[in-house]
Amino acid sequence: MNSYVEMKERHQKEVNEFPMKFAFSDEQFKKAMEELGLTEKDVDKVIGIGAGGFIKKTDVNDYKEMGKRQFKEFWKAIQEDKIGDGFIKEMFLYELANHEYIITREIDDTLDALGLTDNDIRNNNNLRTGLLLAEKEYLEQYEKQEEDEEEI
Image (cartoon, rainbow, N blue to C red; front, top):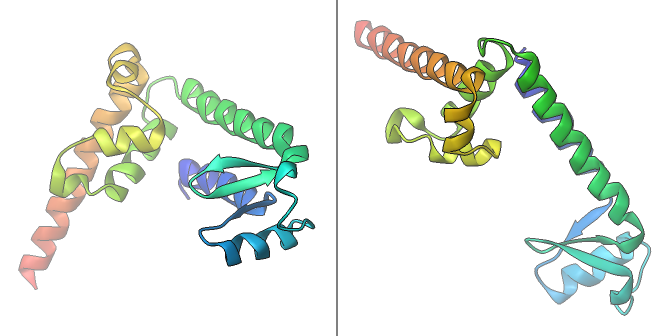
């Protein structure tokens, strides 16, 4: 299995298990507050995290630490890929496919999903190499798939 996908899934599981709630109506808010062991009047005990999400104020440090830990693990994996042909290529392959690169031929959504910028790519040989390898492999896989479909 792809080490990037494994990391992504592990991080997502941790986020999913974190005691945060989302609400987009008064009824959803009331239910979410109850699930956190609060009443709908305990608004002073929660803090918004964006996109309709909120957590207990007592969980803010744990929430920040989770984000910092995941960020460090991600960048450590990038730094350990000394050439760009391992973890970095895997992450680009996954995100290129996930953001329909074959249709758009644009990498902006891929970079956004990874929290990277054009400058990051330009200034890091490993990232640049990994992106080039991933683009090449992704396009070759697509071309082979198209050839196989034509034969049928």
